[in-house]
Length: 253
Image (cartoon, rainbow, N blue to C red):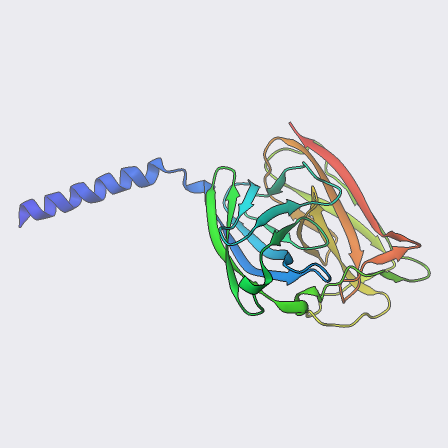
C-alpha cells in the first residue's frame, strides 16, 4: 500500500513538473459561431465569418485550410499582407466588413444547414479545428450596402496614449453627433443612434459603446487602428460617398 502511494506521489510530481514547463500563459483560441454565406451569383463560393476568442498572449492568424474545400483564403481588403493579430485576452471577428475567409467548394457537397471542417493556424498556439455551417442568405444580414447619410454628419477622432508599450493601452475615441447605444441584432436604424466598430490591421476587434476601448498586449510591430461609425442595423454612416471613420498608426518597439 505504501509503495502504491509513493508511486502516485511520483507520478503527480512528474506531471506537475511537465505542467509548469509548458508556457501556460500562451493559452488557446476559441473559434465560435462559424458561418458560411453563399456569394450571390458565384455558385460554390462562400464568405466565412466567425468570432475568435483569444485566451492568453497575443497571437497571429497565419493560415486557414479545409480538407473539404477546393480553395480557402484569408481576405483583408485594404490591409493585404498586414498581420492579423488578436491582442492578449482579446477577440477578433472575421466578417465581411473587415478581414474574412473566402472558401470555394462544390455546391452539391455543401447545402444549407450542412457543415464543413475548417482548421485555423495561429502563431505560437498551433492549429485550431472547428466546423462552419452553411447559413444560407440569412448570413448576409449585416449588409455592406450604400450606408446612411445624415445632416449634419457625425464625426469620430482617435487619440493614442503617449509611449505605447507592448502591455496594452486604452484608445480614446471622441464621437460627436451620435449617441452610442447598445441594441440587439436586428434593431432598425434610428436617427442619431448607433455604435462604432474597431479594427486592428483590418481585423475587427469588436464594437464600441463608450469613450475608450481597451487594446490588449501586442507583439512588436507596426499597427493601424481604425474606428468606423455604424447605425443600429450596422450600416456605415457616410459623409458623402465616404464611410465615416478615423485611423491612427503606431509602433510597438
